[in-house]
Image (cartoon, rainbow, N blue to C red; front, side, top):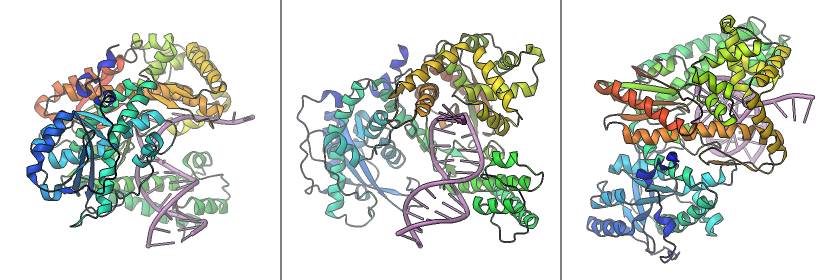
Length: 604
DNA sequence: GCTCCCAGCGCG
DNA sequence: AAAGCGCGCTGGGAGC
């Protein structure tokens, strides 16, 4: 199958670590003797040995003022670069003495496979500080996560070394002071130990990956890693002044809502951000509710207080998000959020610092803008999870609709409500939209009522919802059959589920039958689409002109920044590449991508 | 003063 | 009997 070849050029298809079993294993000796290298004349020799080895284990230690958890290459510095080729003692390079120009060593590192635990972290720093562009990567953290997806065994290096190689845990010095004039022996021993076992760990992992038939998806993840490093380094431009305006406005609005709330309730000390206090205050007004979340409040709407509470929350959330975005802007005026391709159980990305995958769809998105002379290309898959589900279940009725260019939500409305296609109202379509997305993953009738209300503002009676649900599965019989099979597997105690690419999610022994069922129907769809998106990103990195950059991705959406003069050309590349990448995983169903050239993210 | 968990909510 | 899934961030509040 062609999709097996996606990473061929990037990761080489074969891993040196997997064929080194004939060469002597690294001697896991103590490393107290490791000394710091601060002399540039050593770099050439090290480069030569690295080049000859074909693969090098790598780890860095960083320092600088950290806000909260974070330390990033735009405010911090690399102190130590630890390298190790198989069978030799590690080298500890003092970059504070050597500087960031690695000379021949840079090109050597770019020509070999780099083995690291959480390689994306190290590679981002080395990319920003030293200009290093890794070509081939083996990340032992990614391997560990692919093997353990769906469970939480703890995948930090200590735990992996212990679990897979039986190496006893050692004290963690990663957060010690790496900026001081002299590093103590414990620090050096720690840095050396971390890289010393990586060849053996990678070799063991590759065996496990192949045994679990996760090699295809591992190759994809490894090929993706340098692409994500480039994306994080590029970052995304923001209009800071506009963000400040939004924050100020939202904050003022929240304050005014809060005070009118205190007035209405006669509670001058009320903190409307406290669900506890709110619950009590509402009870005082005769409004008895189980909790204060949005759906519950809407259901108990008195026409006055509830409205103010919701308005307060909306304004508060907006102010918060704007504020945290402003704080995330680095010295280059851009936001360099983190994307974690193996941050979820299903294979989707997670995103943090800031989370760029939950930015409100309102005015906030218009603050994300291209740099001078550039445009944004904003592209997203159209209803991709529904298409994937149709392909997986073999639901010809849906597939035919897509092939014929029929509006699927409208068709579902017509079928489910027993109307003619041209008699379907806007509200009918909205109901069907929530049915399509919710029922797909096992949503019940009461769940459908809630979902329709909160996501689409559609009021639905329970018996209506039950009717819709029945009719939905009567219409889409193959979908019902797929659910039935999944139900049977769940009842039989299924312990894993896979995407078409072979990505695996383990189902814990302790999972209930219901949890098994939802994992069984959800993962192939969500994870399968994630696989397709990741293939698209790798292919895009190869196809985009050098002046264009991937800058963000949100599950089914991609943002690219490109010079205005080539924006249209880039738009076309993005669109066709995304379609191609996904279609190869789900060839049964047409895949569609909408892509536009935009002045800001909110423009769609 | 710090750490941890929960409720609530933003997105796909 | 009843049940959509997947995330990260924030403030409140409890506990140390």
